[in-house]
Length: 277
Image (cartoon, rainbow, N blue to C red):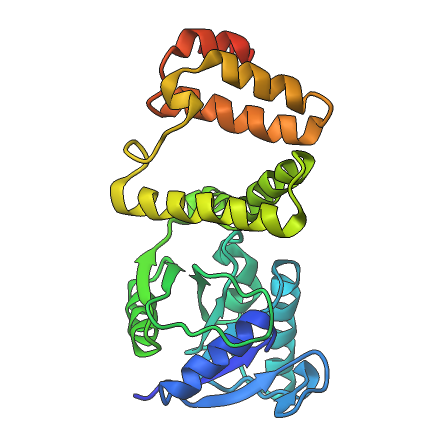
């Protein structure tokens, strides 16, 4: 049986999903938006008759939108029995779709491991998708759909969902924050904005490449790897008048001392004010 999809929320992520579905030849029954957009209908006017209702709305709106879909189906003298309702939050579990589940739908979350900063379509070929559901048949169905749009799937455990999303936040938006702090520090050292961006970019891109080709342990270098306590003390003294950057430096330094191949760990622990665990 062919699957058709309704995309609810054609924003940054929804636009890329919509393009991928259309490219894969998967029928899009309707596009639902809270505002009037070309080719979209509003929630109060939607039919929600597709086999898969895919919610691409912000996390805080998922539960309300799911409840709105249930109400709309009731207005049309229908139920959600036999349909699948999906959200794409990496942080919220399927519990956010409880109203849809109580109305008879199968529920799941499918989280794309990718950044969608604008409405510009991001190709989904080879993108990883984390799938959370308690229903084996639903999982098989979604795995098949993900393969059709060119993605790769893996399972997420509901009980670990918050840690999963925290890892993603460290890997993407907070990585941007760390790189931004590095560029700000380079500017404090007298580099121009363009010089700082280029300088940090050269180091960061080489480091990321090394980490994913050789692993963390074989990519770690610099004063911490050497146990150069005097140089690290100089860093801390220079950063003392910039408390936010000092905090970032200190947190990353303490993690490095605990987990990476660092020389003179005892002295560095003392310098960084680390308590022995």
